[in-house]
Length: 368
Image 1 (cartoon, rainbow, N blue to C red):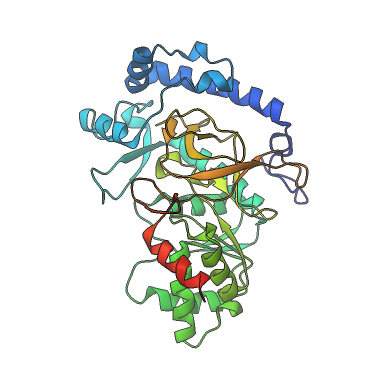
Image 2: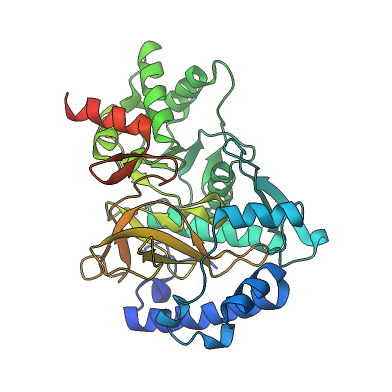
């Protein structure tokens, strides 16, 4: 499948669906995903049986709120007793196509098993998200992030290839690589750049030291994940001033690949929820029931298309604030202001969570 070149949406019908109709479609898919996980994952079957919950009980989004949430600590314990992928793996081990994972810097690393079908789902959806950012076949996407355990680089590469764009998987992390990245950006003039916000700032400063002007790279779109910086106004402004490009934030959790299911678009500031790919609930962090639009809460994520290790009501630990949009851009979706850091790993500023490096950066920028 490929959309018409003039289409603003990848899937017009799905992306312009009225909220009530979308809700009905999500409920049906949630029932199917839960039934699949109940039949194939001892982790979910035991958890739901103990809570008195069954897939057949879910007839509405309100019913789904009664399904117990999953924490990252539970996933680690699952992988300890059923190494390496945990007893929430829903496909035979022989059908695992790719293995990725977390770095393990804060504890036991978590292994991600990705089946062949899921790998294609990631490619299809990331192409769709890139289309929403305004990228098209023939555009060039410069990927300046590490190709290793980190899924961000791989998701971008797969999406670019599925989109029909020219992908430049430059990478990052080797000595002297930033100066070479600046030279290659100046030489190839790509349409878009993917990396982390902090690296984009470092790259701009390095380019200037090398006698180059980052605006001469002629980037139109710069999209980011891995850090909250692109949602912080001061950081966003600095990147825009350096490159004269549109800055788009994206990402959710490594476990929630396709991770760009939270991302900005060519027409919005903030993060759009792609609810037909991953169902996002903004919940009270104590009750894990949904909060009204305009009220701050923590995202809780559920895969709707993942078959290998589906996450069902995984708690993120981030904080955000959601708004419903629709009339202006015709998509009838939810828009998040930003993601404000992980509760367990972040300091507190005026009752809001923010990552320590970006607290300092924000303070410096706002007082310049």
